Amino acid sequence: MQTDRREFLKSTGAFIVLTSAAALAWDSLVAGTPEAASTYKLHDHWWAFAVDIEKCIGCGNCVRACKAENNVPLEPYYFRTWVERYHVPRGDIERPEVDSPNGGYDGFPLRYQPGDGSKNFFVPKLCNHCSHSPCTQVCPVGATFESPDGAVLVDKTYCLGCRYCVQACPYGCRFIDPRTMTVDKCSLCYHRITKGLTTACCETCPTGARMLGDLKNPKDPMHEFLRNHKILVLKPQMATGAKLYYNGLDGSVR
Amino acid sequence: MRKFLQDKEHLVRMAGLFLAGLGLFLVLRVLFVPKDFYQLGHFRTGALADNAAWAVAFAGRAACESCHPDVVTERKGSRHGAIACEACHGALAKHADDPASLKPTLPEARKLCLVCHLQDVAKPKTFKQVNPEEHMGAEPCTTCHKPHHPETA
Image (cartoon, rainbow over all chains, first blue to last red; front, side, top):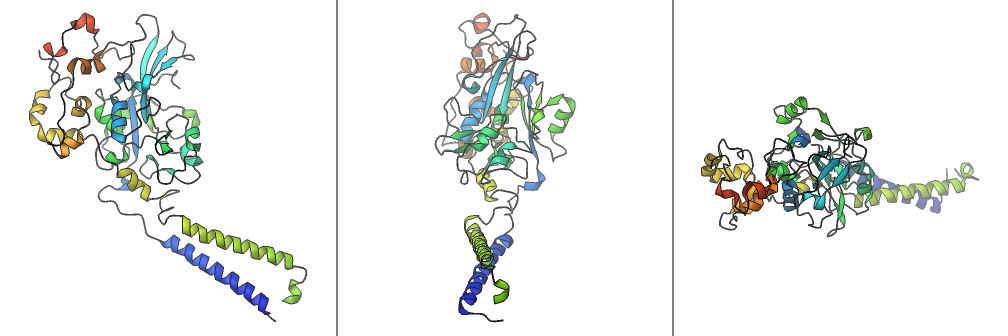
Protein backbone atom coordinates (compact mmCIF):
# COMPACT_ATOMS: atom_id res chain seq x y z
CA MET A 1 0.00 0.00 0.00
CA GLN A 2 1.40 3.32 -1.04
CA THR A 3 0.64 6.56 0.65
CA ASP A 4 1.39 9.82 -1.04
CA ARG A 5 2.02 13.09 0.68
CA ARG A 6 -1.48 14.45 0.03
CA GLU A 7 -3.24 11.44 1.47
CA PHE A 8 -0.95 11.31 4.47
CA LEU A 9 -1.74 14.92 5.33
CA LYS A 10 -5.43 14.30 4.89
CA SER A 11 -5.63 11.28 7.12
CA THR A 12 -3.30 12.68 9.79
CA GLY A 13 -5.23 15.95 9.88
CA ALA A 14 -8.53 14.15 10.35
CA PHE A 15 -7.02 11.94 13.03
CA ILE A 16 -5.74 14.91 15.03
CA VAL A 17 -9.03 16.80 14.83
CA LEU A 18 -11.05 13.76 15.86
CA THR A 19 -8.87 12.69 18.76
CA SER A 20 -8.70 16.18 20.20
CA ALA A 21 -12.47 16.49 19.88
CA ALA A 22 -12.99 13.11 21.52
CA ALA A 23 -10.58 14.01 24.31
CA LEU A 24 -12.43 17.26 25.01
CA ALA A 25 -15.76 15.48 24.91
CA TRP A 26 -14.52 12.88 27.35
CA ASP A 27 -13.27 15.65 29.66
CA SER A 28 -16.74 17.12 29.82
CA LEU A 29 -18.23 13.71 30.55
CA VAL A 30 -16.00 13.04 33.53
CA ALA A 31 -16.09 16.65 34.79
CA GLY A 32 -17.12 17.19 38.42
CA THR A 33 -20.11 15.66 40.17
CA PRO A 34 -22.99 17.92 41.34
CA GLU A 35 -22.02 20.24 44.16
CA ALA A 36 -22.82 18.96 47.60
CA ALA A 37 -25.28 21.42 49.20
CA SER A 38 -24.68 22.42 52.79
CA THR A 39 -27.63 20.88 54.61
CA TYR A 40 -30.37 20.78 52.00
CA LYS A 41 -30.50 17.39 50.31
CA LEU A 42 -31.89 17.76 46.83
CA HIS A 43 -33.15 14.21 46.52
CA ASP A 44 -34.88 14.09 49.90
CA HIS A 45 -37.70 16.41 48.84
CA TRP A 46 -40.60 16.39 46.43
CA TRP A 47 -42.42 19.68 46.74
CA ALA A 48 -46.11 20.15 46.10
CA PHE A 49 -48.61 22.90 46.80
CA ALA A 50 -52.21 22.80 47.96
CA VAL A 51 -54.92 25.46 47.88
CA ASP A 52 -58.11 25.22 49.88
CA ILE A 53 -60.61 27.31 47.92
CA GLU A 54 -63.11 26.97 50.76
CA LYS A 55 -60.78 28.96 52.99
CA CYS A 56 -59.70 31.70 50.58
CA ILE A 57 -61.08 35.14 51.45
CA GLY A 58 -59.48 37.03 48.55
CA CYS A 59 -57.52 39.41 50.79
CA GLY A 60 -54.59 39.49 48.36
CA ASN A 61 -51.94 38.99 51.06
CA CYS A 62 -50.30 36.26 48.97
CA VAL A 63 -50.08 38.48 45.89
CA ARG A 64 -48.51 41.35 47.82
CA ALA A 65 -46.14 39.06 49.74
CA CYS A 66 -45.03 37.33 46.54
CA LYS A 67 -44.24 40.60 44.80
CA ALA A 68 -42.32 41.86 47.84
CA GLU A 69 -40.39 38.65 48.37
CA ASN A 70 -39.43 38.04 44.76
CA ASN A 71 -39.14 41.60 43.45
CA VAL A 72 -41.86 41.03 40.85
CA PRO A 73 -42.64 44.16 38.73
CA LEU A 74 -45.55 46.07 40.28
CA GLU A 75 -47.37 46.67 36.99
CA PRO A 76 -50.82 45.07 37.13
CA TYR A 77 -50.02 42.35 34.62
CA TYR A 78 -46.94 40.68 36.07
CA PHE A 79 -47.73 38.03 38.66
CA ARG A 80 -46.12 34.94 40.03
CA THR A 81 -49.32 34.32 41.93
CA TRP A 82 -52.69 35.99 41.61
CA VAL A 83 -56.26 35.54 42.81
CA GLU A 84 -59.33 35.27 40.57
CA ARG A 85 -62.91 35.92 41.66
CA TYR A 86 -65.48 33.64 40.07
CA HIS A 87 -69.12 34.61 39.70
CA VAL A 88 -71.14 31.69 38.36
CA PRO A 89 -74.68 32.75 37.38
CA ARG A 90 -77.38 30.35 38.56
CA GLY A 91 -76.11 26.92 37.65
CA ASP A 92 -74.36 27.99 34.46
CA ILE A 93 -70.86 26.67 34.97
CA GLU A 94 -70.06 27.08 31.28
CA ARG A 95 -70.15 30.87 31.50
CA PRO A 96 -68.58 32.12 34.71
CA GLU A 97 -67.71 35.79 35.10
CA VAL A 98 -64.10 36.04 36.24
CA ASP A 99 -62.38 39.16 37.47
CA SER A 100 -58.96 39.71 38.98
CA PRO A 101 -58.34 43.46 39.36
CA ASN A 102 -54.56 43.89 39.63
CA GLY A 103 -54.40 40.17 40.34
CA GLY A 104 -56.02 40.78 43.71
CA TYR A 105 -53.07 42.92 44.82
CA ASP A 106 -55.40 45.67 46.10
CA GLY A 107 -58.12 43.31 47.26
CA PHE A 108 -61.45 42.98 45.51
CA PRO A 109 -63.94 45.84 45.22
CA LEU A 110 -67.52 44.90 46.06
CA ARG A 111 -69.23 43.86 42.87
CA TYR A 112 -71.78 41.11 43.40
CA GLN A 113 -74.79 41.19 45.69
CA PRO A 114 -75.99 38.19 47.66
CA GLY A 115 -79.34 36.58 46.85
CA ASP A 116 -79.18 36.42 43.05
CA GLY A 117 -78.74 32.64 43.04
CA SER A 118 -75.16 32.90 41.84
CA LYS A 119 -72.15 31.05 43.16
CA ASN A 120 -69.13 33.14 44.13
CA PHE A 121 -65.66 32.16 45.25
CA PHE A 122 -61.98 33.03 44.97
CA VAL A 123 -59.38 30.91 43.19
CA PRO A 124 -55.72 31.64 43.95
CA LYS A 125 -53.44 30.63 41.10
CA LEU A 126 -49.73 30.07 40.71
CA CYS A 127 -47.33 27.76 38.92
CA ASN A 128 -48.56 24.17 39.11
CA HIS A 129 -44.99 22.85 39.36
CA CYS A 130 -45.91 20.07 36.94
CA SER A 131 -43.88 16.90 36.95
CA HIS A 132 -44.39 16.48 33.18
CA SER A 133 -44.33 20.13 32.41
CA PRO A 134 -45.05 21.39 28.88
CA CYS A 135 -43.06 24.57 29.55
CA THR A 136 -39.79 22.79 30.24
CA GLN A 137 -40.22 20.54 27.22
CA VAL A 138 -40.30 23.43 24.75
CA CYS A 139 -37.29 25.32 26.11
CA PRO A 140 -34.63 25.19 23.39
CA VAL A 141 -31.67 25.86 25.68
CA GLY A 142 -32.45 24.10 28.96
CA ALA A 143 -33.10 27.37 30.79
CA THR A 144 -36.19 26.03 32.52
CA PHE A 145 -36.40 22.62 34.08
CA GLU A 146 -38.02 20.39 36.65
CA SER A 147 -35.56 20.24 39.51
CA PRO A 148 -35.01 16.84 41.21
CA ASP A 149 -36.92 18.14 44.26
CA GLY A 150 -40.07 18.88 42.27
CA ALA A 151 -39.93 22.63 41.58
CA VAL A 152 -40.07 24.04 38.07
CA LEU A 153 -37.29 26.63 37.99
CA VAL A 154 -35.80 29.16 35.58
CA ASP A 155 -32.10 29.64 34.88
CA LYS A 156 -32.09 33.39 34.31
CA THR A 157 -28.52 33.50 33.06
CA TYR A 158 -29.39 30.96 30.40
CA CYS A 159 -32.83 32.17 29.27
CA LEU A 160 -32.95 33.70 25.79
CA GLY A 161 -36.37 35.26 26.27
CA CYS A 162 -37.80 33.37 23.29
CA ARG A 163 -41.24 33.06 24.99
CA TYR A 164 -41.92 29.46 23.91
CA CYS A 165 -42.55 28.46 27.51
CA VAL A 166 -44.89 31.40 28.07
CA GLN A 167 -47.09 30.04 25.32
CA ALA A 168 -46.68 26.41 26.36
CA CYS A 169 -47.86 26.87 29.95
CA PRO A 170 -51.54 25.84 29.97
CA TYR A 171 -52.10 27.79 33.20
CA GLY A 172 -50.73 31.18 32.13
CA CYS A 173 -48.19 31.24 34.92
CA ARG A 174 -45.23 32.73 33.07
CA PHE A 175 -44.33 36.23 31.92
CA ILE A 176 -41.35 38.05 30.47
CA ASP A 177 -39.72 40.29 33.04
CA PRO A 178 -39.50 43.69 31.30
CA ARG A 179 -36.27 44.55 33.12
CA THR A 180 -34.24 41.53 32.05
CA MET A 181 -36.31 40.31 29.09
CA THR A 182 -36.03 36.81 30.49
CA VAL A 183 -38.86 34.64 31.66
CA ASP A 184 -40.10 34.78 35.23
CA LYS A 185 -42.48 32.59 37.19
CA CYS A 186 -43.22 31.21 40.64
CA SER A 187 -40.05 29.55 41.91
CA LEU A 188 -41.93 28.05 44.85
CA CYS A 189 -39.76 30.47 46.85
CA TYR A 190 -36.86 28.11 46.19
CA HIS A 191 -34.56 30.40 48.19
CA ARG A 192 -36.85 29.96 51.20
CA ILE A 193 -37.78 26.29 51.03
CA THR A 194 -34.12 25.29 50.73
CA LYS A 195 -33.52 27.17 54.01
CA GLY A 196 -36.36 25.45 55.84
CA LEU A 197 -38.81 28.35 55.55
CA THR A 198 -42.20 28.15 53.88
CA THR A 199 -43.09 30.22 50.82
CA ALA A 200 -43.86 33.93 51.25
CA CYS A 201 -47.49 33.39 50.20
CA CYS A 202 -48.03 30.53 52.66
CA GLU A 203 -46.32 32.55 55.38
CA THR A 204 -48.72 35.47 54.99
CA CYS A 205 -51.98 33.68 54.15
CA PRO A 206 -54.20 34.54 57.12
CA THR A 207 -56.64 31.65 56.73
CA GLY A 208 -54.29 28.80 55.88
CA ALA A 209 -55.80 28.45 52.42
CA ARG A 210 -52.36 27.84 50.99
CA MET A 211 -50.10 25.01 51.94
CA LEU A 212 -46.62 24.00 50.89
CA GLY A 213 -45.94 20.30 51.25
CA ASP A 214 -43.04 17.93 50.87
CA LEU A 215 -44.45 14.65 49.58
CA LYS A 216 -41.23 12.78 50.38
CA ASN A 217 -41.63 13.63 54.05
CA PRO A 218 -44.06 11.06 55.50
CA LYS A 219 -44.88 13.40 58.42
CA ASP A 220 -45.89 16.34 56.24
CA PRO A 221 -49.49 17.51 56.95
CA MET A 222 -49.98 17.66 53.18
CA HIS A 223 -50.60 13.90 53.07
CA GLU A 224 -53.47 14.25 55.50
CA PHE A 225 -54.86 17.20 53.58
CA LEU A 226 -54.82 15.23 50.33
CA ARG A 227 -56.41 12.22 51.99
CA ASN A 228 -59.18 14.09 53.78
CA HIS A 229 -60.34 16.31 50.94
CA LYS A 230 -61.74 15.82 47.47
CA ILE A 231 -58.75 16.97 45.46
CA LEU A 232 -58.56 18.12 41.86
CA VAL A 233 -55.86 19.75 39.74
CA LEU A 234 -56.43 22.31 36.99
CA LYS A 235 -56.84 20.88 33.47
CA PRO A 236 -56.23 17.24 34.43
CA GLN A 237 -56.95 16.23 30.81
CA MET A 238 -53.65 17.82 29.79
CA ALA A 239 -51.68 15.25 31.81
CA THR A 240 -49.15 17.80 32.97
CA GLY A 241 -48.57 16.03 36.26
CA ALA A 242 -49.61 19.22 38.07
CA LYS A 243 -48.73 19.32 41.76
CA LEU A 244 -50.98 22.25 42.65
CA TYR A 245 -53.80 20.45 44.44
CA TYR A 246 -57.12 22.22 44.94
CA ASN A 247 -59.82 21.44 47.42
CA GLY A 248 -63.24 22.75 46.43
CA LEU A 249 -62.35 23.38 42.79
CA ASP A 250 -65.54 24.15 40.89
CA GLY A 251 -66.24 22.87 37.38
CA SER A 252 -66.42 26.46 36.13
CA VAL A 253 -62.76 27.17 36.91
CA ARG A 254 -60.56 27.32 33.86
CA MET B 1 -5.83 1.45 -1.74
CA ARG B 2 -5.60 3.52 -4.85
CA LYS B 3 -7.55 0.99 -6.78
CA PHE B 4 -10.14 0.62 -4.09
CA LEU B 5 -10.70 4.37 -4.03
CA GLN B 6 -11.12 4.61 -7.74
CA ASP B 7 -14.45 6.22 -8.66
CA LYS B 8 -15.20 6.62 -4.96
CA GLU B 9 -13.29 9.80 -4.36
CA HIS B 10 -16.43 11.92 -4.12
CA LEU B 11 -17.71 9.67 -1.33
CA VAL B 12 -14.47 9.86 0.59
CA ARG B 13 -14.44 13.63 0.32
CA MET B 14 -17.99 13.80 1.60
CA ALA B 15 -17.19 11.46 4.48
CA GLY B 16 -14.14 13.56 5.30
CA LEU B 17 -16.20 16.73 5.32
CA PHE B 18 -18.82 15.06 7.48
CA LEU B 19 -16.22 13.88 9.98
CA ALA B 20 -14.57 17.29 10.07
CA GLY B 21 -17.98 18.87 10.69
CA LEU B 22 -18.69 16.40 13.45
CA GLY B 23 -15.32 17.13 14.99
CA LEU B 24 -15.94 20.86 14.84
CA PHE B 25 -19.36 20.36 16.41
CA LEU B 26 -17.89 18.36 19.26
CA VAL B 27 -15.18 20.94 19.87
CA LEU B 28 -17.65 23.84 19.90
CA ARG B 29 -20.01 21.88 22.07
CA VAL B 30 -17.33 21.29 24.67
CA LEU B 31 -16.35 24.96 24.53
CA PHE B 32 -19.85 26.36 24.91
CA VAL B 33 -21.79 23.89 27.08
CA PRO B 34 -21.09 24.60 30.77
CA LYS B 35 -19.33 21.88 32.71
CA ASP B 36 -22.29 21.35 35.05
CA PHE B 37 -24.84 20.87 32.29
CA TYR B 38 -26.54 17.43 32.03
CA GLN B 39 -25.47 16.37 35.51
CA LEU B 40 -29.02 16.17 36.82
CA GLY B 41 -30.94 16.75 33.63
CA HIS B 42 -31.17 19.11 30.70
CA PHE B 43 -30.09 22.15 32.73
CA ARG B 44 -27.16 23.73 34.57
CA THR B 45 -26.77 22.31 38.07
CA GLY B 46 -25.60 25.76 39.15
CA ALA B 47 -29.06 27.14 38.33
CA LEU B 48 -30.35 25.46 41.51
CA ALA B 49 -27.85 27.41 43.61
CA ASP B 50 -28.69 30.60 41.67
CA ASN B 51 -32.36 30.17 42.53
CA ALA B 52 -31.56 29.42 46.15
CA ALA B 53 -29.28 32.46 46.49
CA TRP B 54 -32.07 35.07 46.41
CA ALA B 55 -32.42 37.14 49.61
CA VAL B 56 -35.28 36.38 51.97
CA ALA B 57 -37.70 39.27 52.64
CA PHE B 58 -40.10 37.59 55.08
CA ALA B 59 -38.22 36.38 58.14
CA GLY B 60 -40.82 33.77 59.07
CA ARG B 61 -42.89 33.33 62.16
CA ALA B 62 -40.25 31.48 64.18
CA ALA B 63 -37.83 34.40 63.87
CA CYS B 64 -40.47 36.87 65.13
CA GLU B 65 -41.47 34.69 68.04
CA SER B 66 -37.91 34.12 69.23
CA CYS B 67 -37.66 37.82 70.20
CA HIS B 68 -41.28 38.68 71.00
CA PRO B 69 -42.52 36.02 73.45
CA ASP B 70 -44.88 38.58 75.02
CA VAL B 71 -46.88 38.77 71.80
CA VAL B 72 -46.96 34.98 71.60
CA THR B 73 -48.61 34.86 75.03
CA GLU B 74 -50.96 37.68 74.11
CA ARG B 75 -52.16 35.87 70.99
CA LYS B 76 -52.53 32.45 72.58
CA GLY B 77 -55.99 30.94 72.04
CA SER B 78 -57.02 33.83 69.84
CA ARG B 79 -58.81 33.45 66.52
CA HIS B 80 -55.91 35.37 65.07
CA GLY B 81 -53.40 33.09 66.79
CA ALA B 82 -52.63 31.06 63.69
CA ILE B 83 -51.82 34.08 61.53
CA ALA B 84 -48.15 34.78 60.95
CA CYS B 85 -46.89 38.14 62.26
CA GLU B 86 -45.73 39.33 58.85
CA ALA B 87 -49.18 38.79 57.34
CA CYS B 88 -50.15 42.11 58.96
CA HIS B 89 -46.82 43.73 59.83
CA GLY B 90 -45.18 43.23 56.44
CA ALA B 91 -41.87 41.78 55.29
CA LEU B 92 -39.40 42.17 58.14
CA ALA B 93 -36.37 39.98 57.46
CA LYS B 94 -34.18 43.11 57.66
CA HIS B 95 -35.62 43.87 61.09
CA ALA B 96 -35.00 40.28 62.19
CA ASP B 97 -31.38 40.45 61.06
CA ASP B 98 -30.71 43.79 62.68
CA PRO B 99 -33.59 45.20 64.78
CA ALA B 100 -32.13 48.72 64.74
CA SER B 101 -31.89 48.96 60.96
CA LEU B 102 -35.62 48.75 60.26
CA LYS B 103 -38.40 49.56 62.69
CA PRO B 104 -41.76 48.12 61.68
CA THR B 105 -44.54 50.68 61.40
CA LEU B 106 -47.85 50.05 63.11
CA PRO B 107 -50.44 49.14 60.47
CA GLU B 108 -53.45 51.41 60.13
CA ALA B 109 -56.01 49.29 61.94
CA ARG B 110 -59.29 50.00 60.18
CA LYS B 111 -57.79 49.71 56.72
CA LEU B 112 -55.89 46.56 57.61
CA CYS B 113 -58.89 44.86 59.27
CA LEU B 114 -61.08 45.47 56.25
CA VAL B 115 -58.53 43.89 53.91
CA CYS B 116 -59.82 40.61 55.28
CA HIS B 117 -63.12 41.36 56.99
CA LEU B 118 -64.92 43.51 54.42
CA GLN B 119 -68.13 41.77 53.45
CA ASP B 120 -68.04 40.01 50.10
CA VAL B 121 -70.41 37.38 48.77
CA ALA B 122 -67.43 35.42 47.40
CA LYS B 123 -65.95 34.90 50.87
CA PRO B 124 -66.64 31.65 52.73
CA LYS B 125 -69.91 31.89 54.70
CA THR B 126 -68.21 30.92 57.97
CA PHE B 127 -65.68 33.73 57.74
CA LYS B 128 -66.45 36.80 59.91
CA GLN B 129 -67.30 39.68 57.61
CA VAL B 130 -68.72 43.12 58.29
CA ASN B 131 -70.36 45.93 56.44
CA PRO B 132 -68.28 48.72 58.01
CA GLU B 133 -71.03 51.39 57.87
CA GLU B 134 -73.55 49.13 59.62
CA HIS B 135 -71.08 47.51 62.01
CA MET B 136 -69.12 50.47 63.34
CA GLY B 137 -69.83 53.67 61.45
CA ALA B 138 -66.69 55.77 61.57
CA GLU B 139 -65.29 54.17 64.75
CA PRO B 140 -61.90 52.50 64.44
CA CYS B 141 -62.01 48.71 64.91
CA THR B 142 -59.60 48.95 67.83
CA THR B 143 -62.25 50.65 70.00
CA CYS B 144 -63.75 47.20 70.60
CA HIS B 145 -61.27 44.64 69.26
CA LYS B 146 -57.61 43.99 70.00
CA PRO B 147 -55.97 42.95 66.75
CA HIS B 148 -53.84 40.35 68.51
CA HIS B 149 -56.83 38.85 70.33
CA PRO B 150 -60.02 40.11 68.65
CA GLU B 151 -62.46 38.22 70.89
CA THR B 152 -61.51 40.17 74.02
CA ALA B 153 -62.97 43.63 74.16
